[in-house]
Image (cartoon, rainbow, N blue to C red; front, side, top):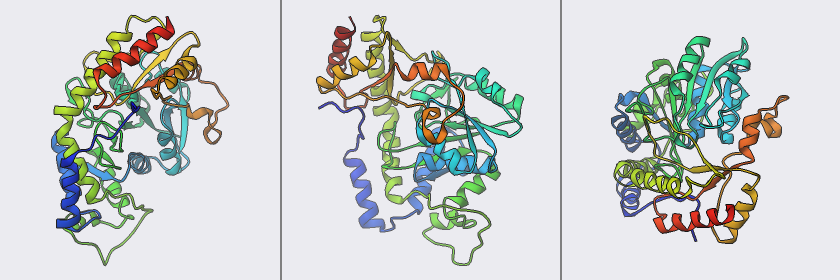
Length: 372
């Protein structure tokens, strides 16, 4: 049966985990995490000190928000994102302010966001939905104009570029996810990338229960015994086991995973591109996109019927995502018309490196037959 998404793990990853279990013997945060951070830094072209690995992408977002936004202050964020973006904001004691998106790119609508700015606005969280880095320059211009910090939820965008610069190699604070189905996985995991020394100091300590300066000792297989704590901390550190998986995955991204994902997205676009009832997300032309998901909009109220038809053929689909402003905990007293419209049309099609071209051809044949 075709999978909607899937972890692609092989012997190399298994052997590295075995090495940590049997040869290294230290399963918590140690030297392997430091090596993974170094590998990521080399890949992005940033300093080793600028990368902090944590246990999930949500943890990365949480620590990023907590580092730059005081409690009860506000973060502008598109409602059309996974719940983790919102949970990270509220977990930090901040307030997520729901904003609409552009219908073509599904990126945050800055005109709508500007209407929602108050004296309590401290940051904007831009979401690279489906690996799309559209409008990122305009986001930074907007943030500068309104004196806001920028937190990039780049959970979908590891390996992508903007103007030949990798996401994470520039910008304010960039957060990645390495969970099981992302462009690369470490089993579970995430990373914060920034050149802000103050933020780095906070998040490095906060991931280890806020024990000051404990990271360097962990890299050397040691622990702090006589220490001080001056703020709230969390057990958000990455384990050596996960780091070992992540290091192998990173080595496979540009040679295996990235090209295959790109190939499959292009095939979907070719086979469905002439269907007037299917709308693909618009990407900026000077970006290199490694697609995490393939989400398309199905027009004329045919999405749910198509979803049922594909399920009958044992082809799973998803809906990424239910808008957060419709959830009880984050419900707004205002509408976001584009987000609500897109939510009724969006469907996610199978995508991962083990899907074959014949699988995609069959999926597209069913879609075209149904919609025509």
